[in-house]
Image 1 (cartoon, one colour):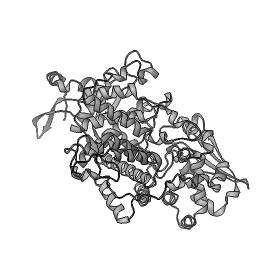
Image 2 (cartoon, one colour):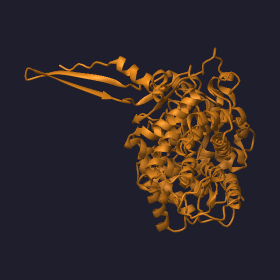
Image 3 (tube, one colour):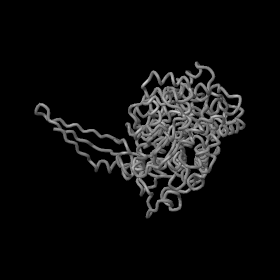
Image 4 (cartoon, helix red, strand yellow):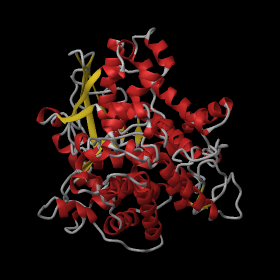
Length: 585
């Protein structure tokens, strides 16, 4: 016989005697200090084992009727001390970080505008002294450089580079376990430079700690995306990432919960970005740099708070801040925030990989198209002139964002990578025109190999590519249709999409319904590591000149959890293979 008794009197007494634990019970519902009595019979003798277990919890809940800004600070500090994400979680986060760095380096190598300007700006402010291998408070380093620059400049430059291609990780704010956590807000893994900038200032941060902090940043950002949809109110999704950056950077550099609360309040009160940066016929540098600019502002807020500036308190319950302004309550925050402290259940496990350069809402259509190409050997049996119509059926918000009629005629890379008809047309054009692909198609039935061969690279969004005549012809044949409630109800759980190619001979080639395309967190059949390795190699070739240096750089990123603080001082330093001119010229 085994019985378990929880002594809540002991629990309450320990909580009352320790002010540091007082926040755990009302908000951290799973945080239990308990006395357990094990009574069992063995060989007719009864043994009693009493053990007091402290902090036996894996999830915490910040309740809507509490000061969540303060408690986010408390959670971040507690997580960095005692959080215990599983190996599975750490490995997935490591992949997202590696992905982001190769995106960033290749964007700089091809001289994209915003990352180049911000990196030059940072380098112009470089400190004249300081050993490259030792931490320097207030300073960090930009990609491909050993110069000490102000930390906020390093963060804005590196985050802008990471986001420029719109090709790194994505979250859709969905938790299957709770209807209250399916707000479906977007977000991307753009904020890892915040962690490395902190490590380059604090000798106590090694690679293992840095990777754990990246999990923390993704956890806060991802959980906020589950409970508050910024896009619904035309606010840019980067707000959640900025708040997560404040908490993470603060926890790494010694901020206390009150200072983190103050910085969150300051950012929300002073620096809310709207989706105006993503509206219009031709998108600008502001679209790609939005996360970076908001994070720069967020870290400035934290620096000022740590220097004594006091921002608005309890911002999630402030009636005139964005949360209660748009979701009316009688005084509480509009939502609880559930966060993990151990195990496998972290937000990063529900984040999705992009397997090339494309807006993630198009992933279902790309999978559907590639399945059609593979199953019917389409480009070997038909020509562009055989096509009467290409029909894509999808959901909102995909229909409204990348199916926007304004995106049917993109002239800039930033508009092209948010145009469903361009993304789909480019992939199909490559399948028709690349001889190596025809050779592969004759010898494979593996969809993973199709994803690798039709990898959408930065060159597919170059000034010349955006004007390609075959692509434009395919774009003109493509119709984008809203699937209505049947499709809308399945987002953000999946990316519900259907692709049909209607031929002039009357045939209708149909991908059928695609829900979890390759790269999606719930896709279980694709060779994710294999496809990502292909992506890293393709972007690595652009960013770093020789294959040996590419491999060495990859190995360092892939072993971040074994690196010392000295190693982190140069983790982003490499010889970038700069192009002779910008990809956008």
